[in-house]
Image 1 (tube, rainbow, N blue to C red):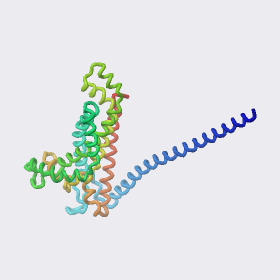
Image 2 (cartoon, one colour):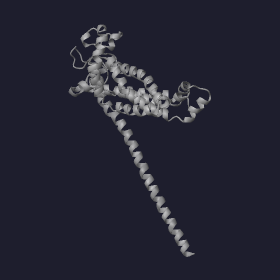
Image 3 (spheres, rainbow, N blue to C red):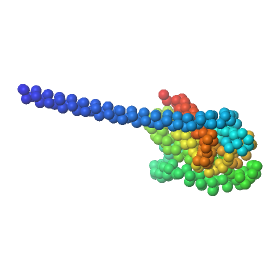
Image 4 (cartoon, rainbow, N blue to C red):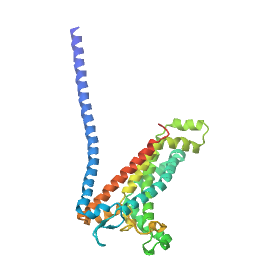
Length: 321
């Protein structure tokens, strides 16, 4: 009897030790995860703080920089008189090219994703998916270079008569929009495929059981159910489009916003966006000009944040709660 009690006591002690050890490990892992999450948040806030701190130094470095959101004249060196830091043209360029690229690429991406998940035979999907992954990892400089040597001459031949300087036609927002479409298509398609595949098979079967055709099932059941995932795909595509610098800079080749903004020629002549001047001119900038490029980067962060907020609001309007 005593031996049995002793053995039971030993077993309880072993279980208690294991429990305490498990709790210690759990607390350590929980603390590690919390540290990682806190580190990510700190990095994000640190990026905003560092760029914002340098950006707002522009106002103390040069009093002429206060009108940076009310003019399109970018002349930080004062070649035309007083220095001017008009960023409105850069902002307009980024918004126009990004929105056009997203509006065109989104239906194409959703259509391709629906085809690969709902219609495409398995053997063809096994061929298309690796090609899509290769396209996703293609360097942006390669896409920009191909657009520079192949796309720009085609646009020049077609739209040259519409522009004031036909020799420079082909560069500008049209070429940049095509480049961005090519860059965000694989991203949106890949994430959209994962979002559509996450939809339970019961939804498909229930829709078909009610008499829906395959197209009606995809339009009225699958797409609404995958709204959140599809919106996330568009968010990531939009973030890549608005932040792309090198490939877009190769096909823009402008220094300031052209004067003929309200004409079709604005898309087919050298133009600007928010990332191009940072890539080209920041290494040589000093003083208030350097701070102005930091302000461009800060505005780019703010615009990206607003786009994400808008996309998340759209995603919250999902049919399936």
